[in-house]
Image (cartoon, rainbow, N blue to C red; front, side, top):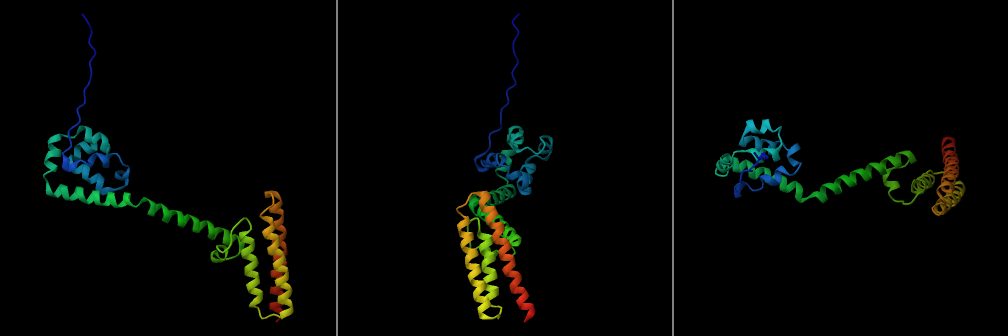
Length: 206
């Protein structure tokens, strides 16, 4: 006697045209964080929804087709369904906007962190670019402090000349190797600290 192999045939229910986007919702992770979408599936058959572990794909493969047909004529269910689709479409129609906002926020945090480490404001740092941006922002900050200090014109002029030299060194460092640039930046920082200290000492003696 020939032994026959048994096959299990799974027939998925046909989704009514009015509810055709249920499958789209089941294939998108949107449902995992949107309570209204999960409630929509549960509303069709709460017992089955629990049995399949809140998996919309498994749910749609096993839900009774008659329940889908009834839901397609149920105005309350259709209102819920349309509300979910409206939120879903709004979210997915503007992905670039959300990405842009997140990108801007991330960039702002980086700028603020660099500015804080350099001892300048984010606005000052944003005016400069390159590897020496933080240094040039510091130089500009010290320059403004000297100009507004009310100290003798000769001293302010000497400070301006020294800052111009440091700024030129910072610009030149852009063309150096990483190791050379790092040493140059350390040297410029030391000199800049000295200039800043001299200004503060003069201000205290006023």
